[in-house]
Image (cartoon, rainbow, N blue to C red; front, side, top):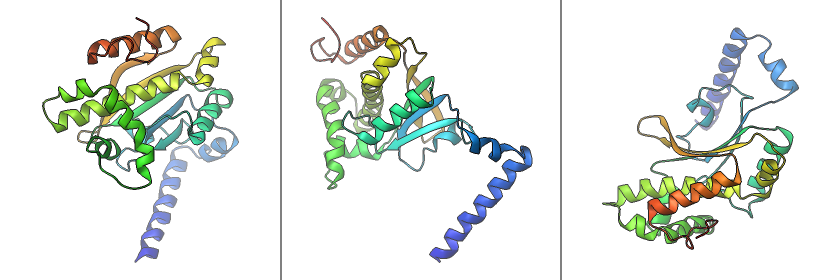
Length: 227
C-alpha cells in the first residue's frame, strides 16, 4: 500500500511536469540555469499552508523557509543561512513572514502543553505570551486569544527579521528590501496583510510603538521603542 501511494506521487509529478511543459516547453531548461526570486517567504511548516500555491506562483518565483510556527530566532543557523542567501546572493526585494490562524504550535504554547523536544522551540512563543499577557488575557475567549497570539507572533518575527544584522546592513547600504507581516486563514484560503510593512529602521521603531499602544505595553516593555 505504501509503495503504491508513493508511486502515485511520482505519477502526479510526471503529470505536473508535462502540464508545465505544455504551456512553456522551455520552462525547466530556463529554470535550471538560474533562480531569480523577488520574494523570501518565511512561513509555518503546516501542510495546509502551501506558500507558492497560495499566491499562485511558479517554481523559481519564491525562496522559501518554513518551520513550526514561523519563528525567526537569532540562534537558528538554518534560518540565518536562508536569510543570508536570500539577501546577499538572490538579492530578494521582499521578505514575507506569514503565519496562520489556528497554528498548532502556538496553540500548544498558549495551553502550556508539553510535547517533548519541541517544547524548547516553543519557548520563544512563551516569551511572547508573557510579554503580551495583559492584552491576551483581555480577549473574550480562547479562540480569540489564539488568533491574537498568532498575529502577535507574526509581528514579533517581522521585528526579529528587521533586527537581524543582515537586514540592517542591507538597509544601511541603501538596498531596496521590505519586510512584510501576513497571516493566512485556513478556513477561507485568504491571506491578510497585518499592516506592518517595514523598509527602514525608523519604520521598525514606529511599528513597535504602534504595537505597544495597541496592546497596552509601556515603552520599556516593548523592545526597541524609546520612551
